[in-house]
Length: 441
Image 1 (spheres, helix red, strand yellow):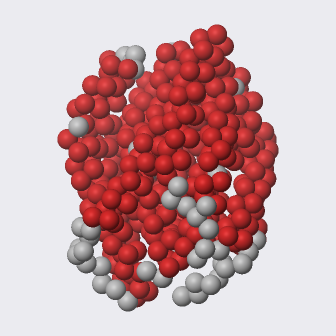
Image 2 (cartoon, helix red, strand yellow):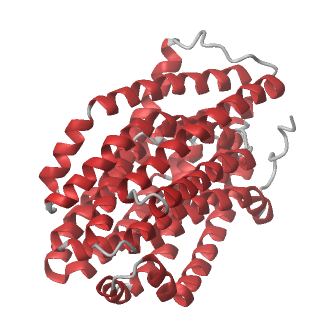
């Protein structure tokens, strides 16, 4: 393996080439949300879209809270890859698989508590609540496969095999879109069809790529994956500390988006539905821009493992610049196609009208948010997770306070302005901790 490949500088061209596969995979992820939203938004009644919005937001919060299974894997694997320690790479992969299965079991057991929490916090009709419960009853069983997919994606990003990590996500997304569309449009299963599509797609994807990864490790690392020597106190303690920090950080991040759903529900089901539609634009931009963050996570960890400071500084500078320029392009595309996309997503005239009134926020947020997205990737690659945790806690607490005030006096526009403030706060707090990464060299 050509481990000296990134020992000097990391140009914008190299970043773009490494990111291209991730672009396509990251584009596929929000397309699932857009398709699901479109399927529910064209059923003629707001309750389907409202139920899907709440149920997916809550389950996204639950599942994304364990995003450390991807992010922690990237940081540890990429640094081990820089050192050439392949045995530790495989052990990290297997340790996280064991952790993922234990977490999945707990989530399945606690499903009734999730349902009760939704009933308590969200003011919805009885019909909408029944649809939410239908979704939850199925989605919890896809959690083991979804968390395992996180680990495989993190593994391939960590060893800079972005084409394979992208193929995993694209496969999952395409299967999800196709199965959900067939079940909703051909079998009239509405919310049940959407969630069954997610369940079947998740398990099909993890089965295929688990078998592929087993053979990949044997061929590339000349090792046979075995569940042995996984219980080492020092390794488990390091993994626990990294995972706990990322867990807390991700929990606060996902809560912030659930908070947007919650405040939107307080304004009425129409605003809840509109915000669900508009968030698809933000999520699409985020996943698109995260291609640079994802592709540089492995390189950042690699440069730290190799103690190559110049290469690290190069990738930081170039990736942030490219991310911002790309965000401007995304916003320009939104300017041109915003109304056409809204009209495709929903055929309800009131929802279209309200969405048009919030056009400006969809345009402004991506360029501003590009900085925090890229800084996240840099901190993940450096395994600087404590600082990520602290920065997110500060940002979310401030966001909640700001959003309560602005929503009270400015309605849904106040909510969206507070979301913009949240993105700025994330960037500023991470920038404050940035110099701690440089001490690793």
